[in-house]
Image 1 (cartoon, helix red, strand yellow):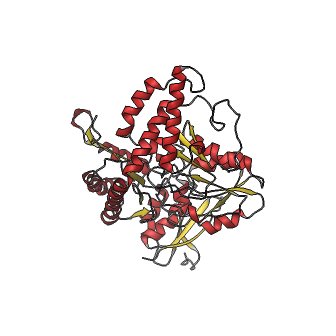
Image 2 (cartoon, rainbow over the protein chains, first blue to last red):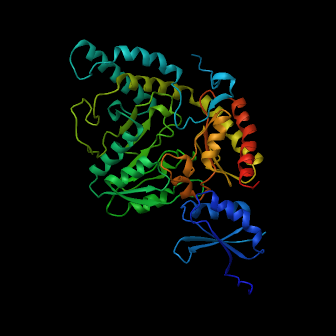
Length: 83
Length: 385
């Protein structure tokens, strides 16, 4: 597999059916599965993730990139690993 | 019963129980207890009637109104007792909407209490503005939105009930025909009322009065019209048989709280500073939110990463600490706090701690000693921390 480009998501976590704080916990657990500089995304229907993923980035020194949608239309939150 | 009883033991030698949730409810103020007991016997009758027992009830109700007015610095005829703070909010806000000549638009920040948000959505057309990361609304933004021709009311709380930030109500000066409503439930008694409002609301159980008593204030010259069916009480804004003993006890508690607030506020402000400092220093990955200086004296909110709010509240309760949480699983609605959401603050792992009148330094130190272990244990359960 080719290395993903700078704006491609290297790893997408399916947390569609998990309640907060589980999506953020998954994000923290799997952060080290992507390289520094790569993008990691979490797909979560729990509306708290919209606030908690950017807050996690701020508290943990990672970069909040954007909110978009997964292929099935579920909300997806994208972060860049900085450390 | 001694008032000095913040740390008392539950049965069977369990951990001492410390209620650190004054923002939800305070125990009856000692100054209100005798008043309430006496008024239960003397103030049971219908204050509208013309016989002796009714005159007694009327006298007690008038006393309650006058004492409340004096404590708050308003006129007695501006005070109405309601069955709750929420009902006072509904009556106050909706009465201003009904009285407006401009329209049904209600401008309010996203961080208002649900009583305000729900009333605005039910009986008006909400125009919601944001808040900064401390939960503070911008007065100029409220005034700018209120310039729209169909906006009749601006609502701004005196202080935020979840994060404690004091709002700059005095700076909100909309056009003369736009009325300002202030939900003062979080601060009434503890802080002087701000100025400029046409109607305001308070809740007695938050200052040490009994539950079941709200205070509605409507300015003498305000354009306020009854939003609900009328009644034939003496006060045109009152609906239903007045809770005379409750109102009198609430007034006695309010007078006492106002008289002692300089001393109590300074002490509580320092206790909350201890919590803010120790939690930030001793718990990793925690966010202490709300304005650190311009805040309610007795209240602090913080959120812990990777922790379920309900589990946190339950574990703290097991250790004897009673606190509230704005996290989804720990709220009555199952939705996370709209206040934390509007601030962009972490919504999970949230704790709101609010000290009671008799909470001591030892109580808050015991909480701060226990918290890091509770958080670490909950994080260990999910393999983090």
